[in-house]
Length: 240
Image 1: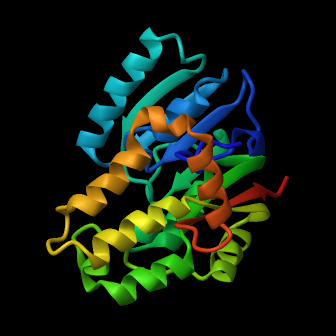
Image 2: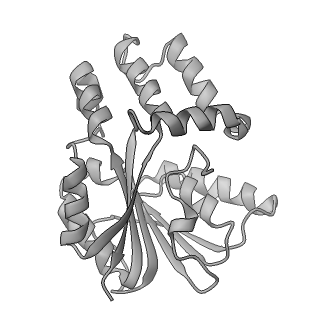
């Protein structure tokens, strides 16, 4: 079973020693660090300096523990103006990023541009049903600085990939437990950004590293992904 913390399924990508993978909006590197257990070249790009510093620290720790088989590079940059040539990567990942940017069409176009023909583009955005619920329950959720600027309908995000040249071939729904955490924070907590006792308890349950191995939590999350997932994950292949 795919780790509850991860959105990207390595089995859905084309991984191998000669493969190049780009993660745009990589944050602190949760997907790059997981994928780099496999051989290959991995590039993480993000605009947030603090997140990239954290990623470098986590990468160093993973390397010391012998958990990195790939060649990992970290770069600060703009996902809508990628500093790469056309057809440079075999896989391109962009998770929970498009909903934050003003010109998502331009970013999506650039993601496909740097992808090799036949390569895989993996996109995740907030799922429309949990997102609409959160927007209705709490104006703070959608008006907080750096928050989400749009809601993608399921059919819409699939069509966007296809229109930009990456034909979807797999769709997954992920992170229903995160829907619970955000619902609790939106409804119960008085001050946005400051979780109360209940929300802290949920976060402790979900984020403690040792809990990632709890099968009961993984099965519950997987079951409720059919009810109220936090994210929709799409895999599309660029035409050859």
